[in-house]
Structure formats: C-alpha cells, structure tokens
Image (cartoon, rainbow, N blue to C red; front, side, top):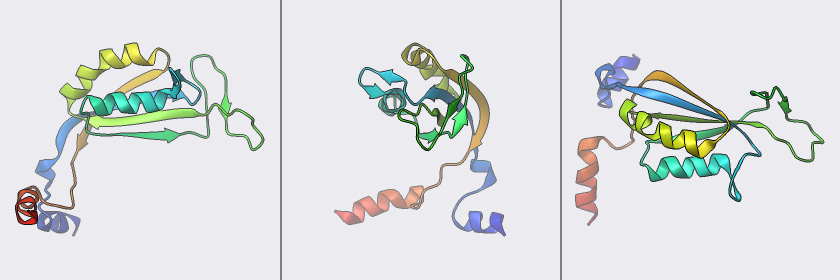
Length: 135
C-alpha cells in the first residue's frame, strides 16, 4: 500500500540516495563570539549549501568532562546538551568536516552512512511549469 502510494506520488525506492548523517554534539552554553555555537554552526552549514540541519535540545547528558547537564525546574543557567543532525551527500559532508572541526573547537562529531529521499510537495517536472504559469 505504501509502495503504491509512493509510486503514485512519483517516489520509488530506487530514488533513495546514499548519503551521510553527521551528528554534532555541543553544550547549550557553547558560544561562537556572542551567538550560541549551534546557531553559528547552522549558519555555517547553510552558507556552504548543505541540504539541511536540525538542532535538538536534550534533557540530560554528559560529555568528555563527565559533568551531567540536566534540565532542572529551578536552574538559573541550564547548560543542556545540544545535538545538530545533518544529512547530505557523502562528498558535501566530507568537504565541510575540516572546517567544522576547526570551527566547533570542543564537542563531538559522529558520522554514519544514511540513505535518504528528498520529498517535495511539488514534483520536479511540475516545479518549472508552475514557475512558467505564475508569470
């Protein structure tokens, strides 16, 4: 049933591409200049035309210093764990890694193989037709 619906939408399993999942682990209080490090990382990825990134705030965790970062009700300055997930082509992720290593300074980067399918509400063939009819 799912395969049939995907086929009707113009999607197929053959359209999944080989890519890479990059995870960047930071602390909420990490900074790049005056802005949060996670904001600076997302802006860097965007400027390098990476397909996309999502930032998640954790509720508890610890890193290399073994200091527990925990969401507490009455915490004046929480320092929660931050995770940035990025999926794109292997070449694009590999190309940005050296820059990210220098940029982030302290944190953890992990890589995994990923298969991904870009979904769009407008099929590729129709996107250009819509632009033509809009003018």
